[in-house]
Image (cartoon, rainbow, N blue to C red; front, side, top):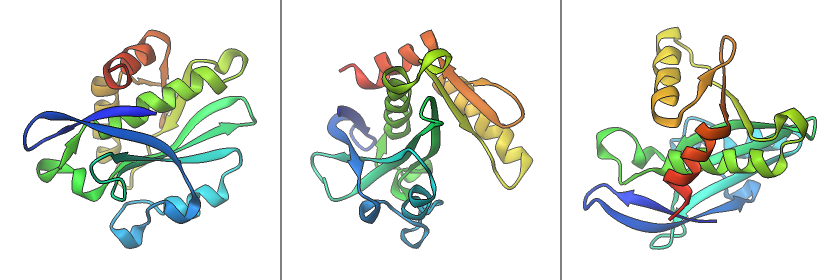
Length: 170
């Protein structure tokens, strides 16, 4: 799927692509990512890894996400992360996470079954509880996620459609 991200140095929109990633293409801790996407994908049933790359540098991964369909009906964003070079103040591209989360929500619309249609679930689990609280607050304010239980969050209906409109409809 074609998307657009923001080059932070110039504030210009840049063409990018979200594509399925093979296990061998997925990033890992050895490449300074927080997660071993390659190993995690192998462990999950009914899961697919997705990469976000720009058209300018298609060999450089800007973000990664694993989408899972639990019991072949419940959409679940198992992992999402922006590249190490897209974090904090030094980030090269903005809107990477937003594009991946909106894409995961869109997958929930097309692949979710029954009551799970248009309902993207994910968990926020950090080593420190205060980091977990901060991250959940970020997901709530920036991506319209609602808390559902202790660590689980959901994006549904109008909230998800707003993400699609903001990050995918260009």
